[in-house]
Length: 492
Image 1 (cartoon, rainbow, N blue to C red):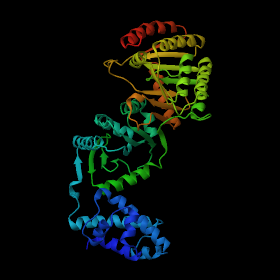
Image 2: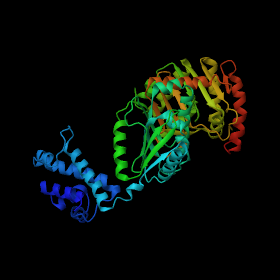
Image 3: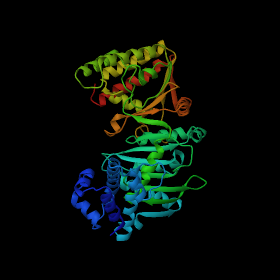
Protein backbone atom coordinates (compact mmCIF):
# COMPACT_ATOMS: atom_id res chain seq x y z
CA UNK A 1 0.00 0.00 0.00
CA UNK A 2 1.33 3.48 -0.84
CA UNK A 3 2.20 6.04 1.89
CA UNK A 4 -0.82 8.19 1.11
CA UNK A 5 -3.26 5.31 1.49
CA UNK A 6 -1.58 4.29 4.76
CA UNK A 7 -1.93 7.77 6.28
CA UNK A 8 -5.52 8.16 5.16
CA UNK A 9 -6.44 4.71 6.49
CA UNK A 10 -4.86 5.50 9.85
CA UNK A 11 -6.76 8.80 10.17
CA UNK A 12 -10.04 7.07 9.40
CA UNK A 13 -9.35 4.35 11.93
CA UNK A 14 -8.13 6.55 14.77
CA UNK A 15 -11.07 8.96 14.45
CA UNK A 16 -13.55 6.12 13.72
CA UNK A 17 -14.72 7.92 10.60
CA UNK A 18 -16.81 6.21 7.94
CA UNK A 19 -16.24 6.70 4.22
CA UNK A 20 -19.69 8.24 3.87
CA UNK A 21 -18.96 10.81 6.60
CA UNK A 22 -15.67 11.88 5.00
CA UNK A 23 -17.33 11.94 1.57
CA UNK A 24 -19.94 14.41 2.79
CA UNK A 25 -17.36 16.52 4.63
CA UNK A 26 -15.13 17.10 1.61
CA UNK A 27 -17.90 16.89 -1.02
CA UNK A 28 -16.34 13.96 -2.92
CA UNK A 29 -17.96 10.75 -4.08
CA UNK A 30 -17.41 7.80 -1.72
CA UNK A 31 -16.05 5.65 -4.57
CA UNK A 32 -13.08 8.03 -4.93
CA UNK A 33 -12.33 7.91 -1.22
CA UNK A 34 -12.45 4.11 -1.28
CA UNK A 35 -9.88 4.03 -4.09
CA UNK A 36 -7.62 6.50 -2.23
CA UNK A 37 -7.71 4.38 0.93
CA UNK A 38 -7.12 1.13 -0.97
CA UNK A 39 -4.19 2.65 -2.87
CA UNK A 40 -5.84 2.15 -6.25
CA UNK A 41 -5.78 5.86 -7.10
CA UNK A 42 -4.53 9.23 -5.92
CA UNK A 43 -6.49 12.50 -5.95
CA UNK A 44 -5.96 14.52 -9.13
CA UNK A 45 -3.02 16.88 -8.61
CA UNK A 46 -5.02 19.97 -9.58
CA UNK A 47 -7.49 19.27 -6.75
CA UNK A 48 -5.15 17.64 -4.24
CA UNK A 49 -4.35 20.76 -2.25
CA UNK A 50 -7.99 21.65 -1.64
CA UNK A 51 -8.82 18.04 -0.74
CA UNK A 52 -5.99 17.96 1.80
CA UNK A 53 -7.11 21.25 3.34
CA UNK A 54 -10.68 20.01 3.70
CA UNK A 55 -9.64 16.63 5.09
CA UNK A 56 -7.17 18.17 7.54
CA UNK A 57 -9.83 20.50 8.90
CA UNK A 58 -12.38 17.69 9.11
CA UNK A 59 -10.07 15.29 10.97
CA UNK A 60 -8.88 18.09 13.30
CA UNK A 61 -12.47 19.06 14.16
CA UNK A 62 -13.41 15.40 14.69
CA UNK A 63 -10.40 14.85 16.96
CA UNK A 64 -11.28 17.94 18.97
CA UNK A 65 -14.86 16.77 19.50
CA UNK A 66 -13.58 13.35 20.61
CA UNK A 67 -10.71 14.79 22.70
CA UNK A 68 -8.12 13.00 20.57
CA UNK A 69 -5.77 15.90 19.72
CA UNK A 70 -3.02 14.66 22.03
CA UNK A 71 -3.36 11.12 20.67
CA UNK A 72 -2.94 12.23 17.05
CA UNK A 73 -0.03 14.52 17.91
CA UNK A 74 1.70 11.57 19.60
CA UNK A 75 0.87 8.95 16.95
CA UNK A 76 2.17 11.06 14.06
CA UNK A 77 5.00 12.71 16.06
CA UNK A 78 3.88 16.27 15.26
CA UNK A 79 6.26 18.98 16.46
CA UNK A 80 5.21 21.19 19.37
CA UNK A 81 5.66 24.40 17.36
CA UNK A 82 2.48 26.27 18.22
CA UNK A 83 0.68 25.34 14.99
CA UNK A 84 -2.81 23.85 15.24
CA UNK A 85 -3.64 20.23 14.48
CA UNK A 86 -5.20 21.03 11.10
CA UNK A 87 -1.93 22.60 9.95
CA UNK A 88 0.04 19.49 10.90
CA UNK A 89 -2.50 17.14 9.30
CA UNK A 90 -2.41 19.13 6.08
CA UNK A 91 1.40 18.80 6.00
CA UNK A 92 1.16 15.08 6.74
CA UNK A 93 -1.31 14.43 3.90
CA UNK A 94 0.64 16.58 1.41
CA UNK A 95 3.94 14.88 2.23
CA UNK A 96 2.40 11.40 1.94
CA UNK A 97 0.80 12.39 -1.36
CA UNK A 98 4.16 13.43 -2.85
CA UNK A 99 5.82 10.26 -1.62
CA UNK A 100 3.05 8.18 -3.17
CA UNK A 101 3.41 9.98 -6.50
CA UNK A 102 7.11 9.11 -6.63
CA UNK A 103 6.62 5.55 -5.42
CA UNK A 104 3.82 4.72 -7.87
CA UNK A 105 5.42 6.52 -10.79
CA UNK A 106 2.31 8.67 -11.15
CA UNK A 107 4.03 11.97 -10.54
CA UNK A 108 2.80 13.50 -13.79
CA UNK A 109 6.35 13.86 -15.13
CA UNK A 110 7.43 15.85 -12.07
CA UNK A 111 10.99 16.05 -13.38
CA UNK A 112 9.65 17.86 -16.40
CA UNK A 113 7.80 20.45 -14.34
CA UNK A 114 10.96 22.02 -12.90
CA UNK A 115 13.45 23.68 -15.24
CA UNK A 116 16.64 25.62 -14.65
CA UNK A 117 17.82 28.41 -16.96
CA UNK A 118 21.04 30.42 -16.99
CA UNK A 119 21.73 33.61 -18.93
CA UNK A 120 19.64 36.74 -19.41
CA UNK A 121 18.15 35.77 -22.76
CA UNK A 122 17.05 32.28 -21.68
CA UNK A 123 15.56 33.56 -18.43
CA UNK A 124 13.64 36.27 -20.26
CA UNK A 125 12.35 33.79 -22.83
CA UNK A 126 11.26 31.32 -20.14
CA UNK A 127 9.22 33.97 -18.29
CA UNK A 128 7.75 35.30 -21.50
CA UNK A 129 6.54 31.84 -22.51
CA UNK A 130 4.99 31.21 -19.08
CA UNK A 131 3.14 34.52 -18.99
CA UNK A 132 1.84 34.16 -22.53
CA UNK A 133 0.72 30.58 -21.93
CA UNK A 134 -1.09 31.15 -18.65
CA UNK A 135 -2.25 34.79 -18.76
CA UNK A 136 -3.78 34.38 -22.19
CA UNK A 137 -5.46 31.16 -21.06
CA UNK A 138 -6.91 32.45 -17.77
CA UNK A 139 -10.34 30.88 -17.16
CA UNK A 140 -11.15 33.41 -14.41
CA UNK A 141 -9.65 36.43 -12.66
CA UNK A 142 -6.01 35.59 -11.94
CA UNK A 143 -3.79 36.37 -8.95
CA UNK A 144 -0.17 37.25 -9.70
CA UNK A 145 2.25 37.79 -6.80
CA UNK A 146 5.71 39.31 -7.37
CA UNK A 147 7.87 39.51 -4.26
CA UNK A 148 10.77 41.25 -6.02
CA UNK A 149 11.38 44.96 -6.43
CA UNK A 150 9.51 47.05 -9.00
CA UNK A 151 12.65 48.61 -10.49
CA UNK A 152 14.26 45.18 -11.09
CA UNK A 153 11.15 43.83 -12.79
CA UNK A 154 10.87 47.00 -14.84
CA UNK A 155 14.50 46.79 -15.95
CA UNK A 156 13.94 43.20 -17.07
CA UNK A 157 10.98 44.10 -19.27
CA UNK A 158 8.23 42.33 -17.31
CA UNK A 159 5.60 44.99 -18.01
CA UNK A 160 6.20 44.82 -21.76
CA UNK A 161 5.65 41.05 -21.62
CA UNK A 162 2.38 41.49 -19.71
CA UNK A 163 1.27 44.10 -22.20
CA UNK A 164 1.76 41.55 -24.98
CA UNK A 165 -0.51 39.03 -23.23
CA UNK A 166 -4.11 39.38 -24.37
CA UNK A 167 -7.16 38.00 -22.59
CA UNK A 168 -10.41 39.71 -23.54
CA UNK A 169 -12.37 38.35 -20.58
CA UNK A 170 -10.05 38.02 -17.56
CA UNK A 171 -7.08 39.84 -16.16
CA UNK A 172 -5.08 39.67 -12.92
CA UNK A 173 -4.86 41.12 -9.47
CA UNK A 174 -1.15 41.86 -9.05
CA UNK A 175 0.66 42.20 -5.71
CA UNK A 176 4.07 43.77 -6.18
CA UNK A 177 7.00 44.94 -4.07
CA UNK A 178 8.45 48.44 -4.11
CA UNK A 179 11.25 49.85 -1.95
CA UNK A 180 10.52 53.53 -1.34
CA UNK A 181 14.07 54.70 -0.63
CA UNK A 182 15.31 53.15 -3.89
CA UNK A 183 12.25 54.51 -5.72
CA UNK A 184 12.85 58.06 -4.43
CA UNK A 185 16.55 58.09 -5.36
CA UNK A 186 15.73 57.26 -8.99
CA UNK A 187 13.33 60.16 -9.57
CA UNK A 188 11.90 61.11 -12.02
CA UNK A 189 12.53 57.93 -14.02
CA UNK A 190 11.01 55.75 -11.28
CA UNK A 191 7.66 57.56 -11.34
CA UNK A 192 7.69 57.67 -15.13
CA UNK A 193 8.21 53.89 -15.24
CA UNK A 194 5.49 53.27 -12.67
CA UNK A 195 3.02 55.51 -14.48
CA UNK A 196 3.75 53.85 -17.82
CA UNK A 197 3.30 50.42 -16.25
CA UNK A 198 -0.07 51.30 -14.73
CA UNK A 199 -1.22 53.23 -17.81
CA UNK A 200 -0.34 50.45 -20.27
CA UNK A 201 -1.74 47.67 -18.06
CA UNK A 202 -5.12 49.26 -17.33
CA UNK A 203 -6.96 45.94 -17.04
CA UNK A 204 -4.73 44.77 -14.16
CA UNK A 205 -5.39 45.63 -10.51
CA UNK A 206 -2.01 46.51 -8.95
CA UNK A 207 -1.37 46.59 -5.22
CA UNK A 208 2.07 47.96 -4.29
CA UNK A 209 3.68 46.82 -1.04
CA UNK A 210 6.63 48.36 0.81
CA UNK A 211 9.35 45.69 1.01
CA UNK A 212 12.53 46.41 2.96
CA UNK A 213 13.91 42.97 3.82
CA UNK A 214 15.08 39.84 2.08
CA UNK A 215 12.36 37.30 2.97
CA UNK A 216 10.87 35.42 0.03
CA UNK A 217 12.57 37.72 -2.45
CA UNK A 218 12.54 37.32 -6.21
CA UNK A 219 9.56 35.06 -6.77
CA UNK A 220 6.85 35.46 -9.39
CA UNK A 221 3.91 33.10 -8.92
CA UNK A 222 0.59 32.94 -10.75
CA UNK A 223 -2.04 31.12 -8.73
CA UNK A 224 -2.72 27.57 -9.94
CA UNK A 225 -0.32 28.04 -12.86
CA UNK A 226 3.43 28.51 -12.34
CA UNK A 227 6.19 29.78 -10.09
CA UNK A 228 9.29 31.57 -11.36
CA UNK A 229 12.20 31.84 -8.92
CA UNK A 230 14.95 34.13 -10.16
CA UNK A 231 18.37 35.46 -9.25
CA UNK A 232 19.79 38.80 -10.34
CA UNK A 233 23.36 39.79 -11.12
CA UNK A 234 25.19 42.91 -9.98
CA UNK A 235 23.38 45.00 -12.60
CA UNK A 236 19.92 43.83 -11.47
CA UNK A 237 19.35 41.66 -14.53
CA UNK A 238 17.76 38.23 -14.12
CA UNK A 239 20.63 35.85 -14.84
CA UNK A 240 19.41 32.51 -13.44
CA UNK A 241 15.95 31.13 -12.79
CA UNK A 242 13.87 28.09 -11.93
CA UNK A 243 10.42 27.55 -13.42
CA UNK A 244 7.93 25.28 -11.64
CA UNK A 245 4.59 24.14 -13.02
CA UNK A 246 3.81 21.23 -10.69
CA UNK A 247 0.39 22.14 -9.23
CA UNK A 248 1.14 21.03 -5.68
CA UNK A 249 4.43 22.90 -5.46
CA UNK A 250 2.99 25.99 -7.15
CA UNK A 251 0.14 26.06 -4.64
CA UNK A 252 2.54 25.84 -1.69
CA UNK A 253 4.78 28.61 -3.07
CA UNK A 254 1.74 30.78 -3.79
CA UNK A 255 0.43 30.40 -0.23
CA UNK A 256 3.76 31.36 1.32
CA UNK A 257 4.19 34.37 -0.98
CA UNK A 258 0.65 35.57 -0.30
CA UNK A 259 1.07 35.23 3.44
CA UNK A 260 4.30 37.22 3.20
CA UNK A 261 2.94 40.00 0.98
CA UNK A 262 -0.31 40.50 2.89
CA UNK A 263 1.51 41.68 6.02
CA UNK A 264 3.68 44.21 4.16
CA UNK A 265 2.60 47.91 4.26
CA UNK A 266 0.41 48.92 1.31
CA UNK A 267 1.71 51.88 -0.69
CA UNK A 268 -0.99 51.87 -3.35
CA UNK A 269 -4.21 49.90 -3.64
CA UNK A 270 -6.96 49.52 -6.25
CA UNK A 271 -10.42 50.79 -5.35
CA UNK A 272 -13.79 50.38 -6.99
CA UNK A 273 -14.84 53.84 -5.84
CA UNK A 274 -13.79 56.69 -3.57
CA UNK A 275 -17.25 56.58 -2.08
CA UNK A 276 -20.11 59.05 -1.97
CA UNK A 277 -20.65 59.16 1.78
CA UNK A 278 -20.51 62.48 3.58
CA UNK A 279 -17.17 63.16 5.30
CA UNK A 280 -15.59 60.23 3.47
CA UNK A 281 -12.34 60.25 1.47
CA UNK A 282 -13.72 62.47 -1.29
CA UNK A 283 -14.97 65.18 1.09
CA UNK A 284 -11.67 65.18 2.98
CA UNK A 285 -9.66 65.32 -0.26
CA UNK A 286 -11.50 68.46 -1.33
CA UNK A 287 -10.96 70.34 1.91
CA UNK A 288 -7.54 71.38 0.60
CA UNK A 289 -6.93 74.68 -1.13
CA UNK A 290 -4.21 73.55 -3.55
CA UNK A 291 -4.52 70.95 -6.32
CA UNK A 292 -2.59 69.39 -9.18
CA UNK A 293 -4.47 67.46 -11.85
CA UNK A 294 -3.08 65.49 -14.79
CA UNK A 295 -6.25 64.87 -16.76
CA UNK A 296 -6.39 62.23 -19.47
CA UNK A 297 -10.10 61.38 -19.45
CA UNK A 298 -11.85 64.73 -19.62
CA UNK A 299 -12.65 67.54 -17.18
CA UNK A 300 -15.31 66.30 -14.77
CA UNK A 301 -15.34 69.28 -12.42
CA UNK A 302 -15.41 72.55 -14.38
CA UNK A 303 -18.90 71.65 -15.52
CA UNK A 304 -21.70 74.05 -16.52
CA UNK A 305 -24.92 74.04 -14.51
CA UNK A 306 -26.86 72.27 -17.24
CA UNK A 307 -24.64 69.18 -16.92
CA UNK A 308 -25.35 68.86 -13.20
CA UNK A 309 -29.06 69.27 -13.94
CA UNK A 310 -28.84 66.52 -16.56
CA UNK A 311 -27.01 64.24 -14.09
CA UNK A 312 -29.79 64.75 -11.54
CA UNK A 313 -32.37 63.81 -14.14
CA UNK A 314 -30.47 60.64 -14.96
CA UNK A 315 -30.30 59.78 -11.25
CA UNK A 316 -34.11 60.12 -11.11
CA UNK A 317 -34.38 57.69 -14.04
CA UNK A 318 -32.23 55.12 -12.21
CA UNK A 319 -29.20 55.29 -14.51
CA UNK A 320 -26.83 55.74 -11.55
CA UNK A 321 -28.20 53.53 -8.76
CA UNK A 322 -25.36 54.37 -6.37
CA UNK A 323 -25.86 58.14 -6.64
CA UNK A 324 -28.43 60.59 -5.32
CA UNK A 325 -29.40 64.07 -6.47
CA UNK A 326 -28.25 65.39 -3.11
CA UNK A 327 -24.79 63.93 -3.75
CA UNK A 328 -24.62 65.43 -7.27
CA UNK A 329 -25.51 68.89 -5.97
CA UNK A 330 -23.01 68.53 -3.11
CA UNK A 331 -20.23 67.78 -5.63
CA UNK A 332 -21.36 70.80 -7.66
CA UNK A 333 -21.08 73.12 -4.65
CA UNK A 334 -17.72 71.67 -3.61
CA UNK A 335 -16.30 72.36 -7.05
CA UNK A 336 -17.72 75.85 -7.17
CA UNK A 337 -15.99 76.65 -3.87
CA UNK A 338 -12.67 75.22 -5.07
CA UNK A 339 -12.82 77.04 -8.40
CA UNK A 340 -13.65 80.33 -6.70
CA UNK A 341 -11.02 80.14 -3.96
CA UNK A 342 -8.50 77.38 -4.61
CA UNK A 343 -5.13 77.15 -6.33
CA UNK A 344 -5.27 74.66 -9.16
CA UNK A 345 -2.85 73.48 -11.84
CA UNK A 346 -4.45 71.48 -14.67
CA UNK A 347 -2.29 69.58 -17.16
CA UNK A 348 -3.83 67.80 -20.14
CA UNK A 349 -1.99 65.82 -22.85
CA UNK A 350 -2.82 67.13 -26.30
CA UNK A 351 -4.19 63.83 -27.56
CA UNK A 352 -6.47 63.56 -24.52
CA UNK A 353 -7.88 67.03 -25.20
CA UNK A 354 -8.64 66.12 -28.80
CA UNK A 355 -10.37 62.92 -27.73
CA UNK A 356 -12.37 64.78 -25.07
CA UNK A 357 -13.44 67.52 -27.44
CA UNK A 358 -14.54 64.89 -29.93
CA UNK A 359 -16.45 62.63 -27.54
CA UNK A 360 -17.35 64.80 -24.53
CA UNK A 361 -16.99 61.75 -22.25
CA UNK A 362 -15.93 61.98 -18.61
CA UNK A 363 -16.15 59.78 -15.50
CA UNK A 364 -17.44 61.41 -12.31
CA UNK A 365 -16.92 58.90 -9.48
CA UNK A 366 -19.43 56.16 -10.41
CA UNK A 367 -21.08 58.05 -13.26
CA UNK A 368 -20.09 57.99 -16.92
CA UNK A 369 -21.47 60.92 -18.89
CA UNK A 370 -21.20 62.22 -22.46
CA UNK A 371 -21.71 65.95 -22.93
CA UNK A 372 -23.45 67.37 -25.95
CA UNK A 373 -21.50 69.74 -28.24
CA UNK A 374 -23.35 72.71 -26.69
CA UNK A 375 -22.42 71.54 -23.20
CA UNK A 376 -18.79 71.20 -24.27
CA UNK A 377 -18.78 74.77 -25.57
CA UNK A 378 -20.46 76.01 -22.40
CA UNK A 379 -17.78 74.25 -20.36
CA UNK A 380 -14.97 75.93 -22.32
CA UNK A 381 -16.55 79.33 -21.75
CA UNK A 382 -16.92 78.50 -18.04
CA UNK A 383 -13.22 77.57 -17.80
CA UNK A 384 -12.20 80.89 -19.34
CA UNK A 385 -14.57 82.82 -17.09
CA UNK A 386 -13.39 81.14 -13.87
CA UNK A 387 -9.71 81.45 -14.77
CA UNK A 388 -10.14 85.19 -15.28
CA UNK A 389 -11.78 85.51 -11.86
CA UNK A 390 -9.23 83.30 -10.12
CA UNK A 391 -5.62 83.85 -11.27
CA UNK A 392 -4.52 80.87 -9.12
CA UNK A 393 -6.01 78.51 -11.72
CA UNK A 394 -3.68 77.56 -14.56
CA UNK A 395 -4.36 75.20 -17.42
CA UNK A 396 -1.78 73.73 -19.77
CA UNK A 397 -1.44 71.45 -22.76
CA UNK A 398 1.30 68.83 -22.83
CA UNK A 399 2.48 68.20 -26.37
CA UNK A 400 3.73 64.73 -27.36
CA UNK A 401 7.44 64.11 -26.86
CA UNK A 402 9.54 64.12 -30.04
CA UNK A 403 8.92 61.04 -32.11
CA UNK A 404 5.58 60.22 -30.47
CA UNK A 405 2.36 60.55 -32.43
CA UNK A 406 -0.45 62.48 -30.82
CA UNK A 407 -2.90 60.25 -32.68
CA UNK A 408 -1.65 56.90 -31.38
CA UNK A 409 0.06 57.64 -28.07
CA UNK A 410 -2.93 57.96 -25.75
CA UNK A 411 -2.70 58.17 -21.97
CA UNK A 412 -5.64 56.70 -20.06
CA UNK A 413 -4.61 57.17 -16.43
CA UNK A 414 -5.36 60.49 -14.72
CA UNK A 415 -3.70 61.87 -11.57
CA UNK A 416 -5.48 63.88 -8.87
CA UNK A 417 -3.49 65.34 -5.97
CA UNK A 418 -3.79 67.96 -3.24
CA UNK A 419 -0.14 67.62 -2.08
CA UNK A 420 -1.08 65.57 1.00
CA UNK A 421 -3.24 62.87 -0.62
CA UNK A 422 -3.64 61.60 -4.16
CA UNK A 423 -5.27 59.01 -6.40
CA UNK A 424 -5.12 57.77 -10.00
CA UNK A 425 -8.17 57.12 -12.14
CA UNK A 426 -8.43 54.89 -15.21
CA UNK A 427 -10.38 55.47 -18.39
CA UNK A 428 -13.35 53.18 -17.76
CA UNK A 429 -13.88 52.63 -21.49
CA UNK A 430 -10.61 50.67 -21.64
CA UNK A 431 -10.95 48.26 -18.72
CA UNK A 432 -12.71 44.95 -18.06
CA UNK A 433 -15.77 44.70 -15.78
CA UNK A 434 -13.76 43.17 -12.92
CA UNK A 435 -11.07 45.84 -13.13
CA UNK A 436 -11.12 48.47 -10.38
CA UNK A 437 -10.91 51.99 -11.89
CA UNK A 438 -9.07 53.84 -9.08
CA UNK A 439 -5.68 53.60 -7.40
CA UNK A 440 -5.49 55.16 -3.94
CA UNK A 441 -2.01 56.26 -2.85
CA UNK A 442 -1.39 55.55 0.85
CA UNK A 443 2.25 56.48 1.40
CA UNK A 444 3.28 60.15 1.95
CA UNK A 445 6.66 59.70 0.24
CA UNK A 446 5.07 58.09 -2.81
CA UNK A 447 2.48 60.89 -2.94
CA UNK A 448 5.28 63.48 -2.84
CA UNK A 449 7.18 61.71 -5.63
CA UNK A 450 4.08 61.62 -7.83
CA UNK A 451 3.37 65.32 -7.25
CA UNK A 452 6.95 66.25 -8.10
CA UNK A 453 6.84 64.23 -11.30
CA UNK A 454 3.61 65.73 -12.64
CA UNK A 455 4.54 69.20 -11.43
CA UNK A 456 7.80 68.95 -13.37
CA UNK A 457 5.84 68.30 -16.56
CA UNK A 458 4.69 71.92 -16.45
CA UNK A 459 8.35 72.97 -16.73
CA UNK A 460 9.15 70.75 -19.70
CA UNK A 461 9.63 72.13 -23.25
CA UNK A 462 6.49 70.23 -24.37
CA UNK A 463 4.24 72.18 -21.97
CA UNK A 464 2.16 75.14 -23.16
CA UNK A 465 0.54 76.93 -20.23
CA UNK A 466 -2.41 79.29 -20.11
CA UNK A 467 -2.94 81.62 -17.16
CA UNK A 468 -5.55 84.28 -16.42
CA UNK A 469 -3.65 86.77 -18.63
CA UNK A 470 -3.72 84.68 -21.81
CA UNK A 471 -6.69 82.40 -21.16
CA UNK A 472 -8.64 83.84 -24.12
CA UNK A 473 -5.98 82.31 -26.34
CA UNK A 474 -7.01 78.92 -24.99
CA UNK A 475 -10.58 79.49 -26.10
CA UNK A 476 -9.40 80.74 -29.47
CA UNK A 477 -7.31 77.59 -29.88
CA UNK A 478 -9.87 75.02 -28.78
CA UNK A 479 -13.26 76.33 -29.90
CA UNK A 480 -12.63 76.05 -33.68
CA UNK A 481 -11.09 72.62 -33.19
CA UNK A 482 -14.08 71.44 -31.18
CA UNK A 483 -16.48 72.67 -33.86
CA UNK A 484 -14.62 70.72 -36.52
CA UNK A 485 -14.38 67.55 -34.42
CA UNK A 486 -18.04 67.50 -33.38
CA UNK A 487 -19.18 68.12 -36.96
CA UNK A 488 -16.96 65.29 -38.22
CA UNK A 489 -18.32 63.04 -35.50
CA UNK A 490 -21.92 63.84 -36.45
CA UNK A 491 -22.73 65.54 -33.14
CA UNK A 492 -23.40 69.05 -34.33
